[in-house]
Each structure stands twice: as structure tokens, then as C-alpha cells.
Amino acid sequence: MTTVAAVIAAFEPGPELMSVVEYADSQVDSVIVVDDGSPSRLRGGDGRVAEVLESCADAGVTVIESPENSGIAHALNTGVCEALRSGADIVLTLDQDTRIGDGYVDRAVAHLELARSVGIVDAVASPSVINDDVAPFWFAEKGLTLAFEPIQSGLMIPRGVFDKVGLFDESLFIDCVETEFYLRARAHGVHALVVPGTRIVHRLGTRTSWTPPRPLRWLLRGRGQDASIGFSEHAPFRHYYITRNRLVLYRRYARTEPLWCAVSVMKDTAHRARSMAVGSDRCAQMYMSAVGVWAAISGDIGKVPERTLRRSERL
Image (cartoon, rainbow, N blue to C red; front, top):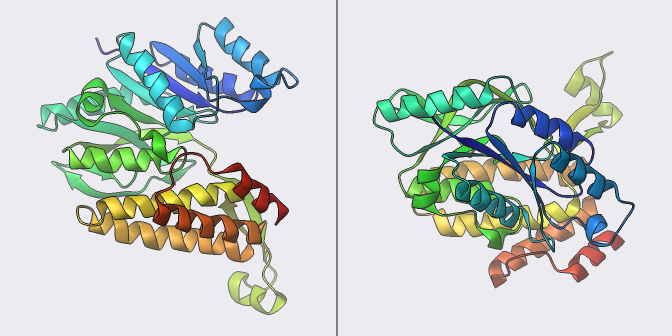
């Protein structure tokens, strides 16, 4: 019988974490929550994070509290190592705000077994629907759909893949961590499969909206309709990591993954150009992106320097 453990990376978690735990706990054999050094927990704060983690522990969840904020890759690796040490055959990685749909784990396990039956020995499984949108996909392998850059949340990774590929790259800290793992896995012959009928609900950035100038409203939305345009954006500090880490990946995989690099450049440029043009904190976003470029050129890794964050906040 296949044993599945869920690993949930948390940072300043709120009460919604318990909902994520409950959704996962009903489908897996064990749940591990790793708190990535939440500042309010380390500094005492008002105790809300400690209360949430205590509630998880009371529910039978294994809770690991990191002594410092070391990034999502470190949190995931801590949980994965604990899951594998405890005998898990497959690890389900989740963010603290991700709820998996009914039957998610069973469908994913069955799909991995189907893949093995047709000769795809090494594979990871990812959802087919994210927030009611079809997850990005591209080619197929032996009739099974392959994911295009699957997100970390909802990823089902067998023990054999970790043995072959290794753990997540902690030098990236946050953002593109799953993408680097995915590209490294592809280099080792591992396929990322889209599992039909699987769904997750996951928060992707912060929702905001932009109302275009009056002359453009009629052209963009039509007379008499709501002229505002909704989209998701990230906090300014995330632009540092996204810019730096994607440039790092382009340098690493330009020769072996030219198609992925080309598509990624187009998608990322369009998404973040919109955010910097009409989103919130535009000056801070542009500043952090520029510093991210310099960090990639200079070979700086790990956590963004505190002085850079302070300058961004002043903008």
C-alpha cells in the first residue's frame, strides 16, 4: 500500500492553516507542518502563530518550528526529510493557503501507477485545475499530458524522484524553487504529469484592479460595462526573488530548455510589466526588480539584504 505524507510550508500562518490541514489530513497518512521562522513566533508577538501551530499539533499533525527564516525551500526540505524518514512513499507539498479537492491524492496516486504501467517510471503529479483555471500544459508522453512548469503546491513527488533528483534548491530562498526542481527533474528524465480531474484552490498573489483612463474604457470594456480590469500582483520584495531566480534559471537551462526559457520570458515579462505599469507600489517593484537583476549578475544568493528591503519600503 502506498504511503503518502503531506508537507505544508508555513510562514506567519493564520487560522486558515487548520482548514488546509483538515483537507489534506483526510486524504493522506500523515501531515507535517514546517513553520519557516515566523518573526512573530520568534519575537513572542501576540501569540497568534503559536496558537495556530498548537492547534495543528493538537490535531495530530507533526509540527516543526525552524529557529530562523531560511526560505520555503529549506522549510520544504525539512518536511520532506522528515516524511521520508518516517517511511512515506510519496510526498505531497502544499502552501499554507492551498486546499486540495476531494479525491485528489487517490487520483494522483492512480495516475502515477498508470504512468508506470506504460513505462514512465519516474514522474511527479500535479493538478489539472488551479482556482477554476486549467493548469498550464504542453506536450504529452505516451498519451499522458505533461505540465508546463507545475506549481509547488499540490505536487506529488515519489521517494524515487527525490533519490534521483535531490531536494529543493535552498539558495533560491523563495520563488522559482519548484521551477528549478522541475527543470532539474526533467534533466534526469523525470516527467511532470497533469492528473485529470484534480483541483486545488490556491492564492496566487494579491488581487487588485485597474481602471483605465476614460478614453480607453469604451475600447477595452465596451460602453456601459464595468471598466475596471482585475489581476494578481506580488509584494515588491517578491519581484527581487522572481527576477533574480528566473535569470539564474535562464542561465542554467538556456541550452537544455530553450523552449521553456523563451515561453517563460514572454509570460513573466507580460505579467510583471502589467503589474509595474498599473499595479501598486510601482516604484518599489521596479527598484526591487533592478536590484534582482544585479543580484543575478553578481551571483548573490539566499535572502534579500535587509538594507534593500528598507530602501524599497521608503519608495
